[in-house]
Amino acid sequence: MDTLVAKTGTLLNSAADVFDQVVSKASQFESTLSPAAMSVVRGFMGNDVLSAGFFLMIIGSSYTFFKDLIVGYYQEVQSWFYVSIIVQEGDQLYNWLSDWISERPLTNSIRHLSAKTVWPENDEDLDYFDDGEEERPKLVYAPGSGSHVLYHMGYKVSVSRETPEQDNSSDDSDRDRSRFLKKQSITISTIGWDMRLLKMIVQDAMDKSYKKKAGKTTIYSTQPFDSYWSNTETRTPRAFHSVILAKGLKEELLSDITMFRKSARWYQDRGIPYRRGYLLHGPPGTGKTSFIVALAGHLKMNVCIVNLGISGFNDKQLNQLLNGAPRNSILLMEDVDAALVKRKAGKDQEGENNVTLSGILNSLDGITAQEGSVVFMTTNHIRKLAPALIRPGRCDRKLLFDYADEHQVRGMCLKFLLSRSASGQLTKDRIPNGETSSDEVDPEEQARMDAYDAHVREVAEQVCLKITHKDAVTTAQLQAFFMLHRESPDTIVDAIPDFLKELVREREALSTKKRLQRQRAQKMKAKKEAEKKKEKEAEIAAGEKVGTSEDEDDEDEESASEFNSDSDDNNESEGGSASVFGAKKINGEANGLRTPRQSEWSPSSWEA
Ligand SMILES: Nc1ncnc2c1ncn2[C@@H]1O[C@H](COP(=O)(O)OP(=O)(O)OP(=O)(O)O)[C@@H](O)[C@H]1O
Image (cartoon, rainbow, N blue to C red; front, top):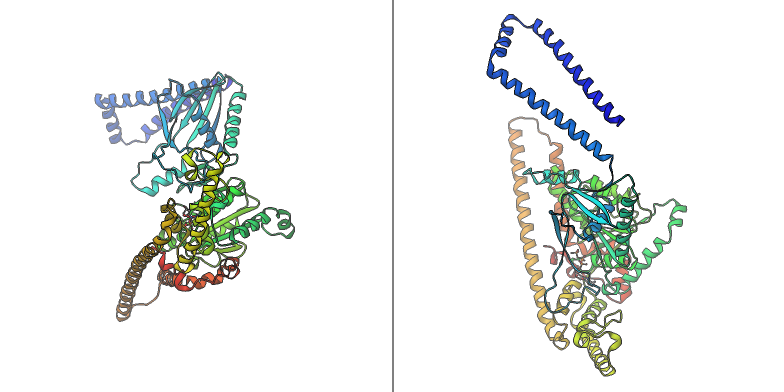
């Protein structure tokens, strides 16, 4: 009440002050006016229309003033009778509370809903597909924007979801930027002065979320212009055995990370920043992302994925993202090369919508929020990466995820054809009638399946003879092939020649496309250079001062490096040998396999 009285007093005092000042200023003003100006003012006062307009203006202003005053008072008075908690987007609590609200029964008073689709949890290894009707998502409704009433433990709780006004700017980047600046918020409030109910709700939302996450992998991602992890997906961990890498590679990486996670003290004692960086490089579809997600599930960690190939991130946002990653997370920066290529292309936007190399380096060096950070970077073009990015300290291990070797061909074949997956579980489509569990299989059926598996193993050996490392087949391509023939192991071996021919055709088409692009780029470059040369000659002829601007220098440098990066691609196989470090040992010598030749590994075969 004291606040109200004080506020009214202040307002009336200031109104009186303003009035006094207006009167004194008016008389001063009158004395300073020339007779001619005074006659204009008098004319204005004598004009009925103008006077009426002036009067209406005063009325309008007074109305607005008193309306604001009353609304202010009303809100002040209202706030005495309820308590509230506000949660902003960007904090994990926002998502927890959103989920909590969407799980409450909706009351009839809620007339504005938001709807979203949610896919049901699939407890099986996602690599195995179910036949039958196409699966549909669940529809989940929640109170939409505005204020709504819900009930919790018999108490009435008001939920208000504030969505910042949309920016209708025609400029995409402005719109996105405004999204970045304005965050959504949820306010929960209840009548009374006791905060306990609201705190219980918040606690309940958090507990429920942790319960849901238990034993699952949470994947955090973000949207351009967001500097926080705005999307969360909780899913059954991908089985570690379902990712098939070159012999020993998976185990080696696992033991490296496990060792790192136990070595906090060791790092501390030696004054080394407690973080570990990995670079996984190689052709697309060799299992880089799948491995990281499966590893996170295996280690009971979360994954935070940021794709640097998408424009809309600047250095500041990247820094905030990496430092704001939830605890116990693997940070995954995908397509690090793409960010740097974009930087070259959009030089004038550098630092606004794109991350810069120095921005990435600073972000990596500055990850201080989490002790024991595990950072993975993936790329299809290691040679395009700046040495500073992949030096030890930022990137401690560089591992090549190469085309499938014998171990992987066999593994992928068995994974899709055996009646038992590597975990020993019967795959659904091999279980008689698709209903019985492995415990209930009768001995006759068991014997039939054992015979079937023995046959599949023989087929896998024949497949290994026909698809070799030099065929440059990725594990993703193998997955597609084996999935197609999973019901008919007998036809697989005969289908291999056509499969390989098709891959060669695809590769040739891609490399032709790439060659044409390169030729076009070279022609453009030659044309530009010829134009520049002509201009310079004209300047010299005109006797003008000839100088190369800083910008031009930069441009030359950029186009040269762009050109180099193309030629780098062609040499990537050699680069692989320099950078593979432990992985090459695993992929090559240790396996008894030879290191891939340049032509086998040539990125021109996979680059689009
Ligand atoms: N080594 C592998 N073991 C099992 N599955 C794999 C493997 N490699 C690829 N796959 C399958 O192929 C698909 C694509 O794999 P993934 O996205 O992990 O490849 P990637 O190397 O990360 O590709 P990119 O470089 O394009 O990001 C997934 O469905 C995955 O299950």
